[in-house]
Image (cartoon, rainbow, N blue to C red; front, side, top):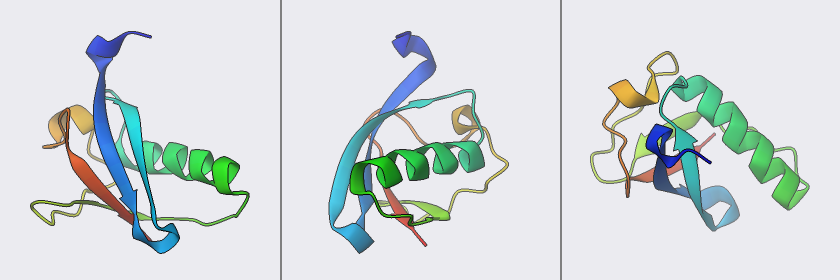
Length: 84
């Protein structure tokens, strides 16, 4: 795995009371990342839950679907919140 093109973040999912440490690709749009994370959570929990909103825990910023991760303020160690 080429870690130069990924950031390690902590994703908090309050609805299911879970936290995940995840490597995210910097060259993907936030919308694609949300879909990938949803797929992973659905596989882990066996529940078809669709989360749509990704926030920065510290700044409360809502990330736009069309922004590339590399152009956002998401960096290694960021804590993100995933909500419906």
